[in-house]
Image (cartoon, rainbow, N blue to C red; front, side, top):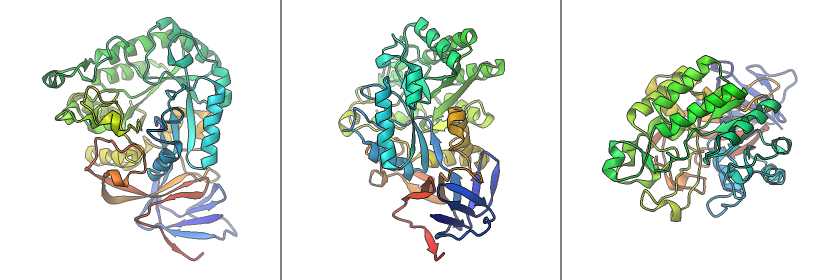
Length: 437
């Protein structure tokens, strides 16, 4: 199959490109940008005038709820949600049921994903058996099965010696650890500590829960030399520590969820359980620090932190509701909204959900995602950056319908998504224009 995407605004943050260029695809590869290769004859011509072509989005945190939580969502529904959001590559945390601590589980999951022939799935292996924080997993076998790094998801390790041994092992064999910094003894609340949580009578999670964990991680990095990716930072104080660690030369990258780029603890309002998230939403000073850290490069990537939750576990009093929100279909729009509100160049903002997260994943992955180049894999999204849409449950492909942004108008909508050169998603309400080849 040969495709000619005509008249599009090509935006590729990896190379700083923002220009009108046609895209030519043969099979699974991009064979031309701007000019067609010799003797190219398209089987399908897509008229993309007024639209933008982006590299397929790369999401560093998306729970697909398989295995173990199929009553909340399925691989099929969440992969479709990813494609509807222009996400062609996504990272799966290991807190499935059972946890991704055995090669057979990882192989089964990747096999299921391949059969669906949709978005690319990159699992994180469990760092410890059963995520119990006691015994290290067989990281070599898990890597061979397809894991790209190792994580405890949202389960902190209480034994610092176990974390040190994990770092030493990872450093020896070139693995990365993905850690969410939260002290196990200070992180048991449901909202950010402060006057607002106190007025609502909600148990708090202090900033020190994040900063103490970061101090521990950085001290162990100095000893071990391990490469660490910090997941879902939430505080100004934590970001200051990350900035200092990077200036020191520690091998550390970090991300933030799209929710925390826009929301604060005040958005909880009258106990809105849609805002029950991990980590909790913090104050305006923290939200502003997150936006500034994105702009100056301290934060590498924005992720959706997609966590579908069913009605029975979400529509409860705030302190009893399960944490999590759907986000795959909102990642692009929330990133564009941040760029518009903050005055950040669009190319720079889109880099936080394309090239930068692909770079975090490393050399084993970066060749296949996050950029548009001749000879590269044809994973891309065709997007209407000028449209506005309202987030409604009925329009979400995800089986999880709960998000703090329900009823909110957002910019940018995906019109089509290609993986390996195939159109795997096309918006029903706005089909692509075509002309005869």
